[in-house]
Length: 60
Image (cartoon, helix red, strand yellow):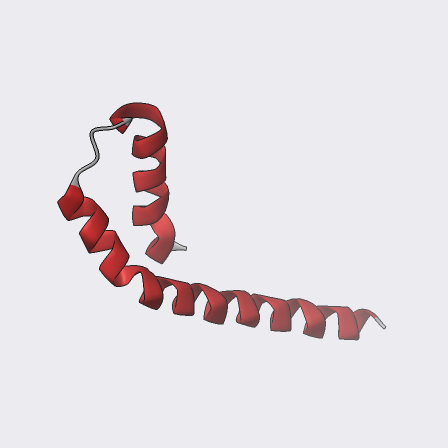
C-alpha cells in the first residue's frame, strides 16, 4: 500500500526521533492528503474483502 508509506514513515520518525521537534510543514502536507488517503484505503480494503468473500464462496 504505497499510498500509506508516507504516513508510516512519519509515524516511525515521530516515535523514534522527533519527540517535540515536529516539522509543521510536514504535518500540513500529510494533513492535506489525509482525506484522499483514507478514501483510497477504504476502497482498497473493500476490494480485498470482496476478494476474500469470493474465495470463501468458491470453497463452499
